[in-house]
Image (cartoon, rainbow, N blue to C red; front, side):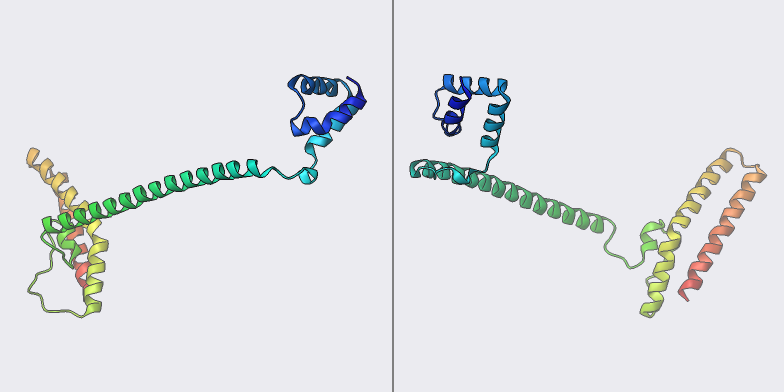
Length: 196
């Protein structure tokens, strides 16, 4: 194939109207000829502003296929949204059931977090006179902040009590227990002072 023949057939090659044999000969020649390779490469990378308009018969089926694909994707997206919304509703309902179950098992809502968190050791009496909102808030905050320390002191006290049952004459364990009891009493006093 000659370079003149390649330059005359480039337009037909780009349109896809060349026979497969002629197209492969053109590609083979362009691969072995630097001038034709540049010609073919620039022709394929050039913007398609000079290309003729597509025939109307090609546009309609192509646009219909694109539209059908978009509708299919939209339907899938809507289906996924329904599942997500349903999942959110089910999750919220389960959380509400869990909250109601926990609240009813604990005997209802309480304004005294220490009554729930501290296993009954330090509780405020329900017959206590009404306090101002600021006082109740200060007491509640002090109890909440002290609750982890009360729990740790109670756990240590239980552990020492168990050890003292095994060795009742151990003076060192008794001193530790006395120290923990003193610390717990001091913490109770500070919580009361914070509320007053």
